[in-house]
Image 1 (cartoon, helix red, strand yellow):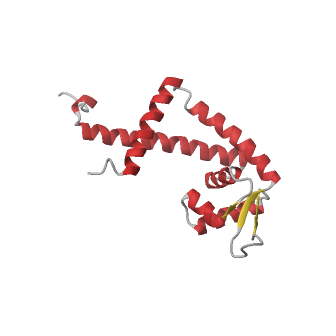
Image 2 (cartoon, helix red, strand yellow):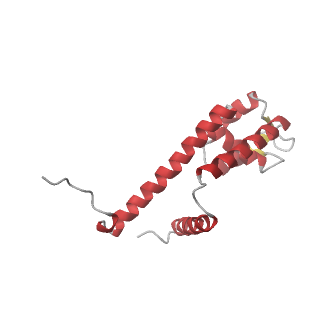
Image 3 (cartoon, one colour):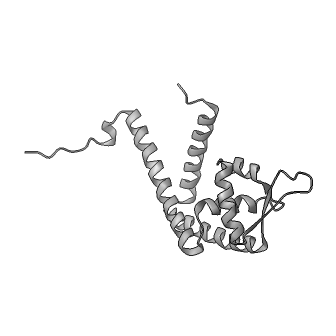
Length: 161
């Protein structure tokens, strides 16, 4: 009785190989995200969405309107409101209606938020650097080139049949 073996990658059709590639990309991204999520939670007591909000605000020293923040993060206003409520409670951000438009709310980092985010960003870079340390400079450039090309083709609709 012979044991059945899985067909080699060469035995798969190109479309099956592409499906396997997509699954591998998803698995890798999810594994990295899970690790970063856990480290943010245990080392800084923040969630990944909170980190993302802080990162967006760090890029805009004058702050952002809640609606701009929602669009930038591609989440609903309600989701951003809950995150901001927590960050305000932790004294990492402030929210204020500008004099020129009382209907809008501008959110910005507090000095404490700037300091905490700087520490988080430094740790985040270290974690990702270690997680991807198997890649050398040339491999990184190649993968980035291919993924950027893929993203561009998908956005432009060039890959649609």
